[in-house]
Image (cartoon, rainbow, N blue to C red):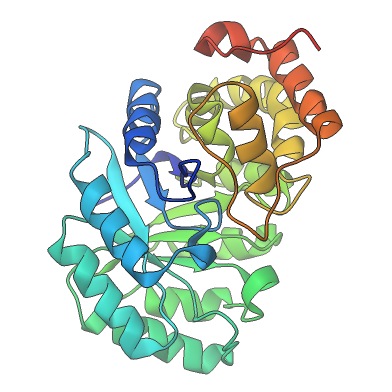
Length: 305
């Protein structure tokens, strides 16, 4: 498995009563399939995984795996509270149709990097499901160095690396070593990491902006394989920069989910304690949508305000 292109961290849509809206999931998944997304990441930060119960997570895997469409890999966030719990969740995902699992170190544990390395390898030894590592030091306080990551990537079960630090050098060293994995940057906390990642030979972008602009992000996330790719990327990146910035102007997924609701996508409310953006902030995002012409392209319905 070699993923290239846009890897969208899908939001989790909720019904008015707060339950997971699986009908809306089907709509959102089909939208991604229609606009060039190559993989979906369920139950990440954008998917509000931290406020989903264990049973909700299991049902989410079972139900969404039945919605698979051609050409899109379904990855699920399977990090547990400890190593054994993570292994159990990965095995459940494998048994119920997942194409892969994304892993971080357990939340709040903040293990030293040497222990984190052992953790990632132990999980990989316990399954044959393709795995990805999400290096998200700003949230987890454990920051994997590229030398450690390259040792982990020798394991055949690791197929994706998602980098969320702002260190272009980290990406450069990994790409220089050419491990047999897909190297992707996150579009948060700094969309500026996208440029060096793609210029250095990155394989794509793991992102939340694709929830609302899937075709544009799919184009940005296409690997550079010809001389014209740089100029095409540059023009589109600069055009999309306002939306990239707006999406992370509040804690993920507050801004993207509020904006999705505003344009008529079936995202539902955020689960408390998170709250939707206020009307003035949403209006700022809606104006960006208009200026980019995304309302006309995707048939979004925006009010005149």
